[in-house]
Image (cartoon, rainbow, N blue to C red; front, side):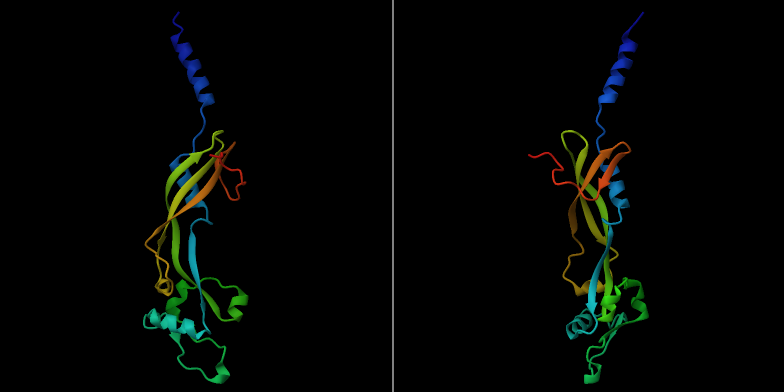
Length: 184
């Protein structure tokens, strides 16, 4: 009787049971894209009663684009009232603003969406149960309000995320412990 198929089957079982499950780039990318805190909206506060912001809005061409109207003069009795008023055309760019900010005429606006675009590197610790993932994000759907900042919306940004291996597989860890990876 030939024992080689039996030996081969035993070898496969032993090798399979000892094999560490590595975190793949694809699995890391899938989980990073699903995480709402990593991809999101980049916002900006506009101080509607501030003359400096009124000038910035005018210089950015937002009034001529029909997104805002700017009151160029103000009577003493109107001091502290908004100089910048958002038009219906700008409504899709307005973000939820806390009531305390609204009371002081501050409006949050959308500048762009920041999306996870790729996984650059996956490093697993020596025990194989934790991984450090470096990934890149890029800005998409840049709005006209982006002209108010000096942010370079064409660049990509490198970030880090931490994963831990559990019984269900690799999971993104929101708050990793300090001794996450092996010391070098």
